[in-house]
Image (tube, rainbow, N blue to C red; front, side, top):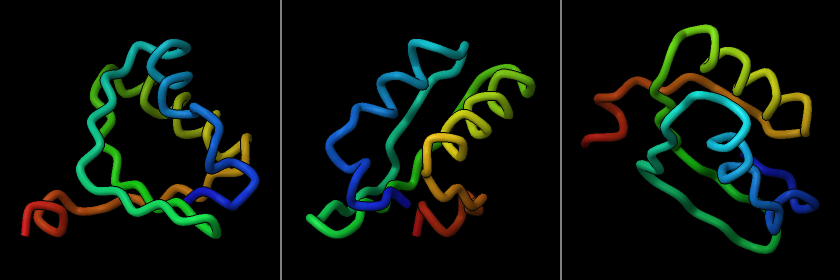
Length: 72
């Protein structure tokens, strides 16, 4: 989840450039108040962990989601 101050920042693009991960947006809902994105990150475990840590450091709330939840 993105707070309002981050909604217009290209954080997912930055993650793909800074880390050896492939980003795949599975679902998204963005308003002026909040951005909720279900994002699949694929890559070496250390890179995925580093990307998540970077997102959290920049103010994004990150929670793991089960694949079956996204596919239904």
